[in-house]
Length: 175
Ligand code: APR
Image 1 (tube, protein in one colour):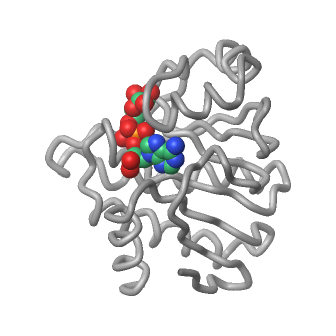
Image 2 (cartoon, protein in one colour):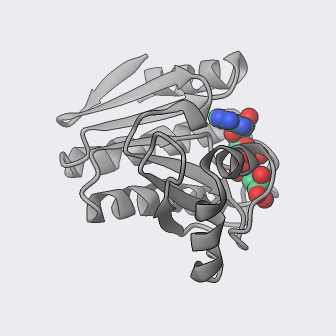
């Protein structure tokens, strides 16, 4: 499914983030930036050691912020690492921190002159963010950014499995 956001395209696909041919893909990292499971594990496995080598130089990343490294062996030239909030009860700034992950990642992409970015569904795996809430925050934040930033021509959400895709599709219809 896809919609127009300003002059940009905002699209949903079901698939694997490491296969994406966008200029950057976003990693659902942790504050150490030293790797993990899920998306983090897949990206480091597929991208190779140069990504971790660059991450080691960065000295970590606070929740809600983003850092950029090489894409290593991936099709994507860059990996933008962002650290989502661990979901507790939604009353500990989780929504603001999740929105910040998307905004800060896109700001890095704009700063590098990138035209296309692929996101996974940040925080909805190990970090336990409820999918429907996360999808609404993610799409609302990205759409608002794209309406002000036509330099980013395409943002793709890469959803792992039908349930995640359906949650984002429902949220996109509400936009
Ligand atoms: N491609 C796209 N999406 C994926 C992939 C993949 N290869 N693998 C997992 N996902 C999905 C999950 O199903 C979930 O919907 O990405 C979403 C985020 O899940 P996680 O990777 O667990 O990320 P998150 O919930 O943000 O937790 C981050 O997990 O891997 C560790 O080091 C990471 O500590 C950090 C934490």
